[in-house]
Length: 358
Image (cartoon, rainbow, N blue to C red):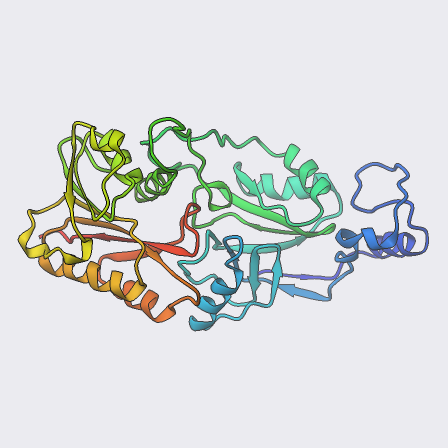
């Protein structure tokens, strides 16, 4: 836990000067004159001194799913004290939530007096930092320029996720730095970028599979057997086949002809829910991005796990309307499984399960 008391009297003078003579913004690094109305100063207005500020938990919510994250954290006993953009802040520790794109595991708050002082605080901790900007954008950009550059080139799939330590930081206001040297995702703001294929796949769904496998740190290998349940039009099937794996696509509707013609692809027409896993040959991977109610998908996952016919499951859990938090908890209770919200997920979670070693 980190607690910071007050700001300097110098800041008070700067703030009061800005209120009565609003010609210079405290957020600006240079002593130049700027004229603008007081209503245009949310950044430094939020910078008014706080007597104490304690932040022990920080979670980055996917855009549009802030309420869902807050509901999930409440079920885990965590109360959100305030929001900073999409970053949920609490005086309680950073517990796991599958709905968070990124979790700041060791948040600290520090007062800063200048751009230089902010950069020095971060550089003293470690080399690599990623910015989450929700306010004071110009000031944050100038601080970022003083930090060592972080290589964030798009990934060429398949590739392992980065292993270098990456911290995260933001400006709560012009004079308050929030940072965490450790976070749950190795990617900037929990969002990996890929070199996209805009020609081959029949849909952009392949990016979801790429992200899932990258986060998992493994993917289908040449010669392995895979099932793609609810495959049409074939975005996931295409991505699996491009890896050299043998994939059987199962759906009531036919695949895109280009995908169906790939040499390691076979097609079985029918319902993914009508299959009896016990009658299927063992599969190294079972994938599904099918649209189904969460409870129905939970039953499907349970059948495959209990059958012993799947070594690895990667399934998208899709929600319609209200979030079914009870089914989320049921998925989390499956031994060997875990849930995550991918950057490519919408109102969805991705379920991963690995068969335990004998």
